[in-house]
Amino acid sequence: MEPDEAKKRPSIKDVAREAGVSTATVSHVFSGKKHVNEASARKVRRAAKKLGYTIDRVAAQLRTRRTKIIAVLVPNLEDLFLNRFISLIESRAEDAGYQVIVSCSRDDLKVEQDRLRALMGWRPSGLILVPCIEAIPDMLLKEYPDVPVVAVDRVNPALSKYDTVTTDDFASGRDVARHLIDLDAQNILVLAASDEIFTQKERIRGIEDCARDAGNVVVNTLVAGPDAKKAAGKLSDWLDDNPQTKAVIGLTNVMTLAALSAFSSRSIEPPKNMMLAGYHDSLWMTARRVPITTVAQPVDAIANAAWERISSRIGKDGDQVLNIIYKSTLIKRKSTSED
Image (cartoon, rainbow, N blue to C red):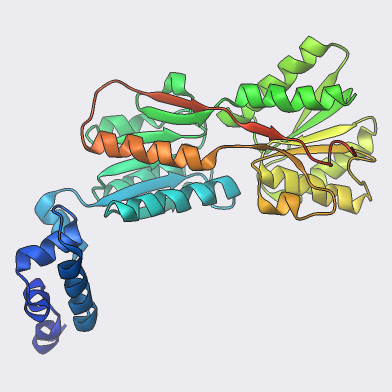
């Protein structure tokens, strides 16, 4: 950059002069450390916009050793539950004066560790983590012991040294299985993306537990992988070899879509030919001629709890690890009963 170009870059002093306030006021507006009355804050924001002033976050990081940033790491960005969760965290962070950096581990443990180290390079105030499987990487505590962490969704609370926010997936598995068995489903197929992810393992365990209690109910699990198109093909092959299957449970919204794709290619109409239930209620599940029975996870409550816990940890509020567990709700629709 040429010297004359550098001179054109607006500084905090330029913004203060334009807004008619002190440099401390400008700093407080952008850092959120102290309250600034709304009239002055508006003047500062207008002046900054007019001058093209932006915060030099790298310089701020070097000065404070910690940024007003929340890092969020999730296993994928295709899951509608995670999309909604991230959106809610971003909203709460914005209200509190934080920026959010989101990264994706692509359901790969090696990538997860690499992404964690990259995120920690920003010196975030805290980390909200949805792990690939059930455990949080050991390197996080070893290499970054001072960073507040809250683990969400896939984590097994029994294995976590950090606060967790999860749902009772064993109970939801029992609930959806009980519903299908009450409708006389004697042969149930569970369509899973993975049998290594804690949430899906717990749902499978709950479904199988309910089937054992009922007696004379067969439960099979097809691990079809995370790709919806490939999962649909595997399910179609399964149905060719197992025509006795009377109900399918998709353990994620992606697996539910895969089931619908396989059904469409085979002219299967739920619930006439096959009952279908899924996980994570979404608008598309009702925007159909036959709405889908689904387990609705309380994503708003989960996101709010995660934000409250990370805020408390940043504020060094208490040392005891908290495990917050919510209950999901089974929404019964026409895909499992024509009534």
